[in-house]
Structures are given as structure tokens and as C-alpha cells.
Length: 516
Ligand code: FAD
Ligand code: DLZ
Ligand code: SF4
Image 1 (tube, protein in one colour):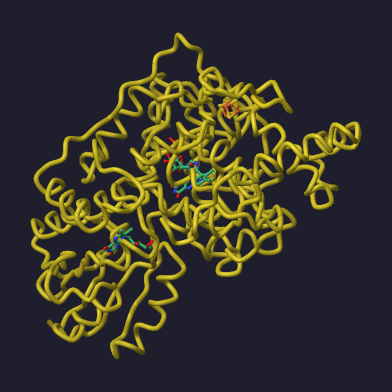
Image 2 (image 1 turned 60 degrees about the horizontal axis):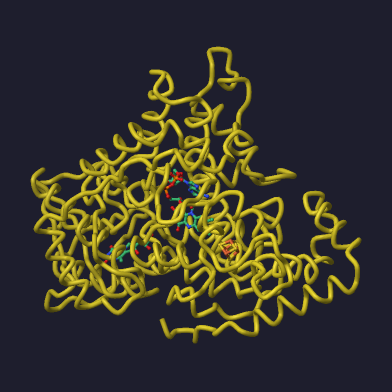
């Protein structure tokens, strides 16, 4: 070389990435590597692996078209060491660069490994801030440190003011308030049709990757049939346009709704692209604001959508880097059950769970409320150990990286951080799922019953959860109502609910850890 070796990871597929910013094509080179370690540190859904590898190959080709020298290591190349550390070491030995430049990775485990690279490789290693977010972990920490409350709502207001999204000329939020969340909780009426699906036909590169992944990782949870993800920035842009056109106007109203057999409904299916770098979150938020300004989408939809990206997405990343690695170790509700086997097989007569797990297996996707209130709610109520639930979510979704998965699962869904992130556990009975979906109409269980053989299991599980955690939840004002109801419950009714829930839990087959 001896220029700079610039490493681009599989979720850093952005042309103005920090590590590429000052590249001198005549001297510097880019390294990209498909490695078994990244595909198997958890056994990712095969569709996620195809998405990453195909998007990496397309991105490398785009760099080459711009005159940049790319060393691209394919999974089956002879000599592939199987790990990122091994591939960087091989490239350093071969090219003798003056230094290595990399953008900070999205996961703590890789960041921890990179800290050792300089001494292991004997060459300077520069780790640059990832500028693809609205804020940095450092700025988040500065905002959070010393505050009495680090709730998302406060952070979101701070970000709205800082960025100016949906703010009027007087510095006030458009529509007079920062959040329209209370208007975004409608079920979808039967006569409202689902929007059309955005689908990309696999090209020759994707087809080649599909074959490789089928052969190497076909035994992982999930199917490859019908792979239709975008794999380039241009295709991801078309997915954004499709969403804005067909789904954004109703995104807000039906944000919490679920419909059997419809995996996406009015959601964007864009996290997979933003998280890998194919779409810039600033551009996505701007596009949504433009749609509101043009009168194409109402404020409750556009504010709701921007809140998810400017608010939640940035907030969970801030919490992750602020609190790791200790964050992943907490188990505030002392949950120790193993994951039921049906999370991997989909074999359960509970329609909501069967539907969500089935679509997760075929799509590597479920929308937020399915993740939170169906699979997440069940794991919370059943008291499954947080590490097993975290692993499942990291495996099964194409958009899953620990920086975003962990706070959502560990904090928001399982309350395993003791309420650091969420103001209360999102525990719900079958009544909630019945109100927000049509699952119960197609279920052998009845969401209105509690103790009969055909009673929805979520109902007894809900009271079992409140009962066994009453000491921990006492004092939380948002749990006052269920605790009061529990306190007033006749002892024989409570005993019957307890017994019903325990019989149900005892009937579950548990998955052997590591078997899937
Ligand atoms: P939409 O519903 O259309 O939302 C628009 C965008 O907002 C998303 O693309 C996403 O970038 C962002 N967003 C929405 N909610 C959140 C949130 N809570 N946290 C961060 N960003 C958010 N998101 C991931 O990107 N990766 C994960 O691994 C992940 N795991 C989750 C696990 C659980 C248990 C829960 C409850 C949520 C999880 N989320 C995760 C957040 C959210 O469910 C997904 O971002 C969303 O479902 C992705 O689909 P979409 O693009 O259609 O999102
Ligand atoms: C998810 C993933 C997979 C499956 N494979 C690779 C790979 O072979 N090479 C690579 O550079 N990145 C891959 N990735 C993305 C990384 O896992 C991701 O960069 C880290 O988890 C940090 O976010
Ligand atoms: Fe799910 Fe209960 Fe409704 Fe069946 S009745 S779909 S188990 S909430």
C-alpha cells in the first residue's frame, strides 16, 4: 500500500461513512469481509444473512465503480479466517498499511474486540464516531448525566428542538404538542384494506448468495422462500417512497393494530435498511415531514413516525452505550424460565403467537406491537430468563443488532432493567390483544374467559405476573390500578388463577438452550 486500510462492516453500507470520508483512492484501500463468526455469534435468520451479504456485495461493487480499491473476502474464499479480527490481521500483514480506520461498530462485543486491535496488529487503529445517527453516545451521556429522569419523552422533545423537525417558526411543536400518541391506538376495521407490499425481485448477486446461505446456514431458524428485501440504497429508497405513498397516511392511526396474516400492515419495514446504512434516518424523517407539508399525510401519522426514529431509535442507542456492558446482566424481575419450544417451532394453539412466530420464521420481520405485545408480552408474563429472550430477538429479525434489540427487549419488553427505560411493564391480558387484532376470532381460546379449559392463557398469566411481582411493582403509580384490583380480588379467585396459570406453564415444552 502503504496508505490507510479502511474497514467497512456489513451494517455500515453508506458512501459517506466516517471511515470513508477522506479516502484517497490512489493510496487507500477498503476491506470488506463475509465471515462465519458474524453469521453465527447468534444463529441469525438466513434471510438476515442473505440481506447483509448481498447488500455488502452490491456496496463493494459501487465502491469499485467509484475507483476505490476494495478487497472483498467472500465467505467461501480459501484462506478466509472466519472472523473480522482475523481478516483485518491478514490484510494488515499483506498490505502493511500505515493505519487502520474503522467506524465504531453497533455492538459492544465487537467494540471491545476492536480496542485490542492496535496492540494485536501492531498498527495504529483509528475508531471514528458513527455520524449516521442524530446524536452520539457521548452527547447522549452529557444530556442524560445528572438528570432526575431520562425518559424517552424528554429526550424526544430535546431532539425535536435541536433538529427542528415539526417545529413552527416560533420554536413550538407543530399542532401544539410534541406527541400525538394517544391518537395512534386504533384497531384496523375489517373494511380497511391493507396497503400493497413492497417487494424486490432477487438479482443474480442475491440468487448466488441465497444458494451459499442455504448451504451453510439453512439449518438456522427461518426460511429463505420469497426473499424480497432491497439490497441497494437505490432499492431501499424505492421502499421508502412506497411506504410514504401507500402506508404513511394511516401509519399513526393504526400503529398499534395487528391483523392476522398481514405481517406489515401500515408499518414501513425500513429499519432493516436504516440499520445497515442503506437509508439515512435524516432523509427518512425529512421525507415524512415533506409528505405532511404537501398535505399527503396527517400530523398524527408523521409525528408518530418521526418520533420512532428521532426519538425511540436514538434513545435506545444512547441507553445502550451509556449502560453497557452491565445493562445486559440485570434481571430485575428475577425471571428464570426457559424459552418455550414453540418460539422456535411455531407449534402452539394460541393463534396470536402462532401467527407472529410463523411470520417471523418466513419474513424475519414482525412489526413493533407484535414484538412487544404478543411474543414479548408472553415472555414477560411467563417469566422467561432475559438472556434467552434477548438471544431469540437477536436471532430472528433482519433488523436486529444489539444496540437496538437489547434496550427494546431487556428494558422495554421485559422490565429486566427495573424500570430504567420503561415507566411500567407492558404486561397485558388477552383483552388487549383482542381489542387490537382479529387474532382471537380465529383462536380456540376465548379472551373473555379466565379459568375454563378454553380461557385465553394470557388472562391467568397476567394475574400470575402481577401477583408474583406485587412487591416489586408497588410504588409504581402506573401499576396502581392492577395492584388495587389484585388486592381486592377474592382469595379463592386468586388461588384459582394462580393454579390455572401454573398448570398452563407446566404444560409447556421448553427449548433446550443451544438446540436452535
Ligand atoms: P415502523 O413501525 O414502520 O417504525 C419506523 C421506524 O422507527 C423503524 O424502521 C425503526 O427504525 C424506528 N423504530 C420504531 N420503534 C422503535 C424502537 N422501539 N426502537 C428503535 N427504533 C424504533 N428495532 C430494530 O431496528 N431492531 C431490533 O432488533 C428491534 N428489536 C425489537 C424487539 C422488541 C421486543 C421490540 C418491542 C421492538 C424492537 N425493535 C427493534 C423496535 C421496532 O419494533 C422495530 O424497529 C420495527 O418493528 C421495525 O419495523 P419497521 O421498519 O416496519 O418500523
Ligand atoms: C450481521 C452481519 C453478518 C451476518 N455478517 C457479517 C459479515 O460477514 N461481515 C461483516 O462485516 N458484518 C456482518 N454482519 C454485521 C455485523 O455483525 C455488525 O457490524 C456488528 O454486529 C456490529 O453492529
Ligand atoms: Fe391470543 Fe388469547 Fe386471543 Fe388466542 S384468545 S389469539 S391466545 S390473545
